[in-house]
Image (cartoon, rainbow, N blue to C red; front, side, top):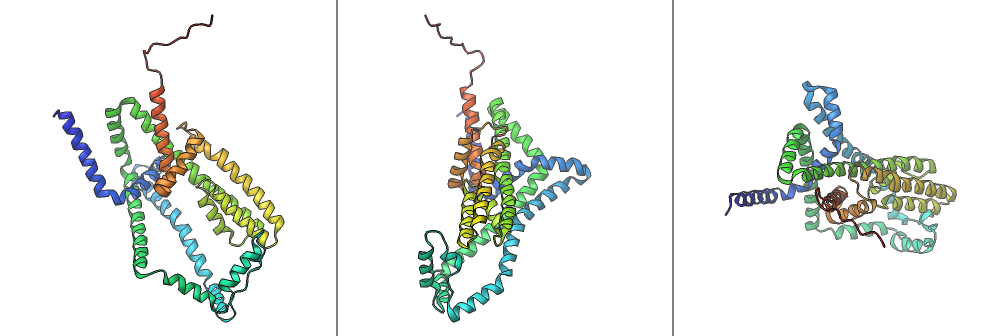
Length: 354
């Protein structure tokens, strides 16, 4: 066996062993890598601003920003839930004595109001009905499922911790790792591999900018629109619209539900204006702003970007929102390399028509 073959087999075996050892941590490592690649230009600016004496300051600030970015929405939802606690307790006490009457907005739902009101009365209209529904739901949550739920929460918390840890280490030593990756790719794949590596970096940054930044913009816009329209809890609904806005047509679903709610409570004008303004804003964000971000540098057609988002979400979950478009961008770049005319190849000229 040739030495080159032995070395290749050894490298593949070592890589497979490393993946096997780390397979439960692949997701947080990939999340950290995506975040590091997407925010590296900002990391460079912060390092230049803080100077070499405070080289770790940028890593600490950006890692802390990621923790805040994730923790603030979660904290807000928890605080909102605690604030609604007294009202929920009063609702529980009222349901035990007289049942829960049908809310006016449920009976006013267009087309299904009467049916929804009957279903509500059958399930919650009698005294103590809410208690029976809650006990029935909790009865289905047996001890094994409860342990599984606790284990899932603990596993997600650990994954988040390792994601933050890996992200901090990437900020500290990312330059060295990037130089090593560039050297290996150039040595093994030549200029084509180096160009493809550049496509990967640009695609990740475009996916993050197109999904996260545009989603945040849609969330802020719709929060203001919900507040003006008089919708309860506009910040929470705006946050939900922004998060679902990262998925194709997700923001439209939230907007439609809010508009239906306004129609049900009799705010017809507010519902129509909100639906029109929100639909225009979401349409502009999805069809004009997001494609500019996602196609920047990677030259990925919009249809492939959309297919990458949907296919990646189906295959890899939320992480697929970034991996899907990146993989398709690499495939498109490789295809363009294969289809490009080679230097020195004979040029075929068709005979002129007689």
